[in-house]
Length: 429
Length: 91
Image (tube, rainbow over all chains, first blue to last red; front, side, top):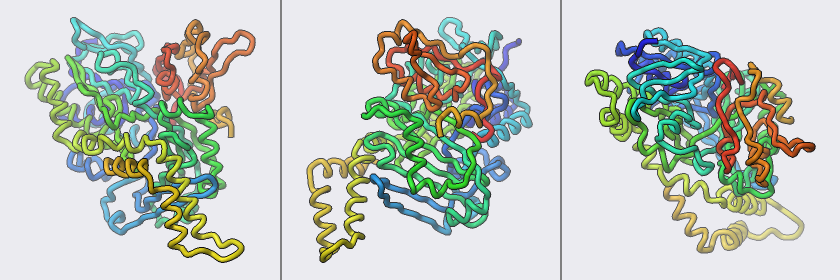
């Protein structure tokens, strides 16, 4: 095969967006996807926030196959056998275009792949890339199941595990500290049942995050998103904290226990399992790849660690799309100059820094430290639920004043140095 | 619901050979065996007779968590060949 301008490894949001923009500029681009079609290996929680992306590819979003506009935000704090739920809705969330939608990736990415082809890009499915081709330290192409494909630039869009970033020497193997594993079930339910159960208008959706006693003392939590005809129910576990947990449970058992919680059980009742999936999440909140480029290579999306856990907000897909777009701008400049060395491709890092991607990641740099505090999923939810239990409980004999119950609760749980330290830490989220 | 029944609703196109190779000489000395706990599909087990760690690679969801969790680099891990492995219809 002759040399082409750009080869993209991986048909996910970052890789496809990059390919779309390159093809639009008339640059030859080839996407190698190891699944049957783009999306067939991809998983999200999930929801996508569209407003940060509208300036980038305004023509794409209105026709995109999204699920439901998120109009309801729900957060649940779980104690042992008790829970506190906060629910928020606003007409602002109903204004069109909506700011956030639930999404299923198999369908979405397939659609985006078709858009790439429409623009003149090549998307080749069932092609795994196992090696980068190097020449004197420069990346000059990829080896895909035995075939050498030479290109001026390789765009590594191969996801959180990114074997490409590893091979390019841009980072070592992903450490347990920097990754979480997500387990997910897609559960089929009739749209009317979903709307009635979650209190939604037709076409509207809910995003529900849960934390506390389902992953006691662990960095993690649960999620439940409403799609058009399914629910996405999942559990996220930080790998490092999971490995240290006692007793040593299995990931799938923690997930099953989560499903059995009555807060979840009644929401998924009568639903039929449509798919079981698992995926890695870069918990790189504190550290995206310090140098997401090299001679002849640019790293985008999850592969570059561009994901952010802000506690009540979890983001990754917008970063993937924006980074793909910015990588394409960089490649375009490099092609004009006829120079694909690291010094030219460094522009990508500059563009990321100027965009919302690295700005948001910098703003929320410390949120991971605060969220990793084991008391966030152990002591605090348990304590809050205990105080509320006492508050609402009428037992035998006289009931003490509500203010006394609250004061006692605060004294027992909150008035100590540790809590003060945690509160100061919370400011960082 | 056990992981095996859950995996039975997924679509897999299985290759003849495992895409994950286990270096038994390392596992042999490992007491942690993080792979047994972390795999969402519950696909790792220890063969009672030989003491070897074995994987049912045909149900692999390709998340890579075992590779990240193994502290000793005992797993020679690659993705299944192009066109093989799990094919998500929802994702």
